[in-house]
Amino acid sequence: MLSWEIRSYRQASRHPGPVFFDRGIPDLVGYYLLLGQPVPAHLTAAAQLFRYHQRVFIAPPWPQIYTTDSERHQGVVGSNPAVPTGKSPDQRKR
Image 1 (spheres, helix red, strand yellow):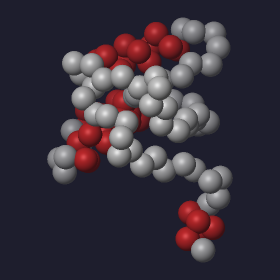
Image 2 (cartoon, helix red, strand yellow):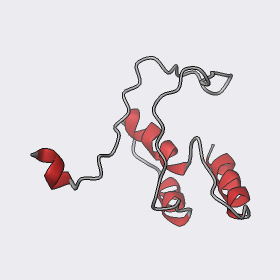
Image 3 (tube, helix red, strand yellow):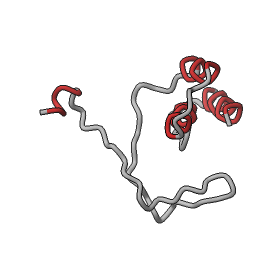
């Protein structure tokens, strides 16, 4: 999976305009954390080396276009996205 994400990253870096990623290297880190496993050093290094833009686009779940396949078994039902508010962590705690 990591080599696939690195390939996608490199292909996108040759594109002259904005590029939207469905998934990326940080997701791989999240999978390890979700499973309660230590994140391998090479994966941490890849996440630091292949950085995405600081500004990200977050879309809400979109059931009409969501599909599963042989590699994506997770359904859209039950997702609970955390949408940033633009406030600092201290402001969000209040």
